[in-house]
Image 1: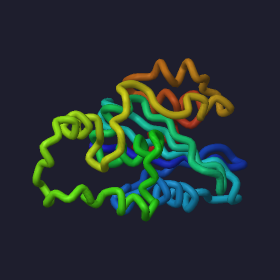
Image 2: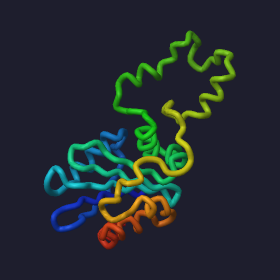
Image 3: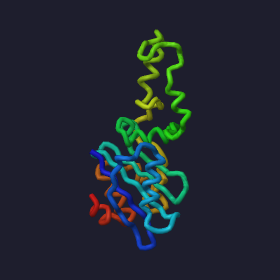
Image 4: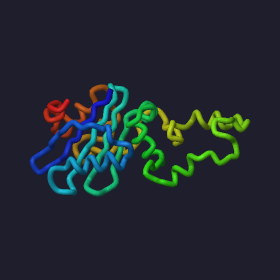
Length: 183
């Protein structure tokens, strides 16, 4: 089960709302969702929190029209889930919005679909890739550990979080009560 929430930084402090990720298929979709949640100026900071039952959590920071900044607590665990795979593949170089990726997915080696080509190297390569064909991320944290450092949570503190991480992050940002209200 996932928990997802948006925290928008305004002149009056933080505003939180829970969110449904049903229509999110790419990092761009997630960034657009965050930008839409900003109640004020277009350059405000919006944080997207995603958590999967204390297995992994992710923080996506969107500042106006800048590219999203991402941190994932356990990339290998996240890559095994649909929303986590969106984040990890963005971090390890997969751009799910690139139409050229569709060409990369085609089987152009001359074999029929599902027919092995006889090479044993392909089995090893397949095991090191996610379902989307991107390289499998390593276990442990991945992304920008300084994503929240200017908001009151140091790199070291972020790396040390495990269970109930989103509450601890919200507490460091001064938004614990607001986050708990949408939980």
